Image (cartoon, rainbow, N blue to C red):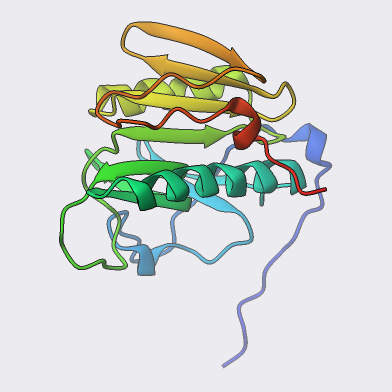
Amino acid sequence: MAAPQIDLVPVPRGSVTFPVVLRPPRGFNASRPSTWPSVEGRLEFSKGNLLYMPPCGEGQSSVAASVSWVLVDWARRTPGFDVGGNEAGVILDGEVRGLDGAVWKSSGKKRSNRFRRTAPMLAVEVQGEDETLDSLREKAAWYLEHGTSTVWLVLPSLNVVVVVTASGEKRVREGDRLPQPAGLRGLTPLVSDVFWRSA
């Protein structure tokens, strides 16, 4: 059987607005990761749309790794919590999001390959080249609506973290510590640790 013919159309990156809405493949089920298409990039499912973003660039990926290091280092000293990263999938009310970093209260259950079904206590989104602060604020609002108490919007181009809670936003700059998220005792890293770079 011949492979299906795929027509590729080259489009300049600057002429496309991300995220791009994709047609879900046959058999797609948002709650089953095995039914998602295999693409080079990042996918989420929101408001009935399968959304595509290109792969992370160097800056975003380095900062996302620093965020994971900060969260894992804290969790190793603070039992009772699980940390996720690397586009950690969470499904809430039928929508699937991928987090650059997150902290959940430990369920004590064996880990699976399925999406988590509870809102994290802390959600972290690292701004990529194709993301605006307003688009990240929309995601933050979604997390808050679904039970997350604190969201960190990490902005590599400014070395700033915008902390979003139900009471509003606070910008935290290099040299300062992030305020402790609700229920996460001792998680107050320096902003410089979030933007850590090797020499």
